[in-house]
Image (cartoon, rainbow, N blue to C red):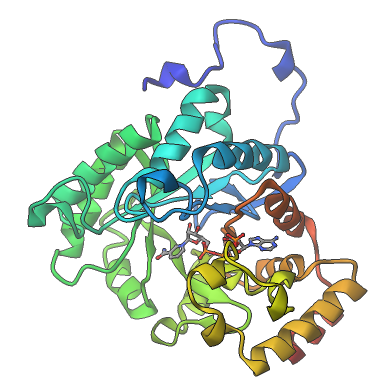
Length: 353
Ligand SMILES: NC(=O)c1ccc[n+]([C@@H]2O[C@H](COP(=O)([O-])OP(=O)(O)OC[C@H]3O[C@@H](n4cnc5c(N)ncnc54)[C@H](OP(=O)(O)O)[C@@H]3O)[C@@H](O)[C@H]2O)c1
């Protein structure tokens, strides 16, 4: 896809673009925040698209193309513009990227309204050992394949999905630098890294001016915090100006009000489908959920809104990529991006979690 396909024809006067503000910090009323140590701005609430795909092909996804398209339309309306995907999502099929690509192709006027973040590392697009990890070969080939599936000419953020013990870091950063120089990707981030691994990358910060790590995507939710093996990464991000992008921020839906009444649960609820109920819905957690819901209702919020709003005020926090399986979930989650909790709210939440 050429850059001309960004739909705005710069040669023709466009009255829709007359009289715009000189600068802007929000889009469709969604506040934005800086991405890492860059000038890029990203929406407070983003969209996780892991489970979007083609369930009818057996890829294990939950949200089909038709529903995903409606969610993408609603996301733009709500200013939820930071979209997270990965090449391997859904049985290494590439289908999450494909659904996004098909929507972008059908809505070319929206391409410049989306900050696209994808990932590469795991085996994809080839059967030899060269189509995994962070070698030059795999970084270049993965990016070309993602650009094709996403039907776009550039990816705002390419994330290394995992730390590579085998490839020299210099080789990975140089490959990213080359892609940035060609404007095929614009920034890089990482995922599933701890602070010691970030420090290993930081040693090269003077050598590679463009391919600096700007974000870290790790698991985080308010009930469990960071995973034990990556504790301290959020604090590292806060100290170094990186964006911490929390994955599974709703713990697959546990941090919503739907799991409070166990007798009402059924197939179609993700934690039921993933056989996680007994592990997740312990007595202690259920008690905390009830206390948090009481607070949320007292403040006129839902539990997901309280959760996401609390996370947004944590130092180092970047865009929060809650997944939504319906437009109603997206609308509910998007509202959290505009909520500002007061210190007494934060204290009350912290007493419970
Ligand atoms: N970097 C990595 O290694 C990694 C790993 C995992 C995930 N991720 C990223 O993080 C994103 C989010 O994580 P996640 O998909 O695990 O899940 P999540 O955001 O913690 O939870 C999403 C689930 O919660 C339910 N939900 C969402 N909003 C709701 C609402 N308002 N009310 C009631 N239920 C609601 C939905 O369940 P139903 O489907 O049952 O409706 C949805 O599937 C992923 O999509 C992906 O982009 C990255």
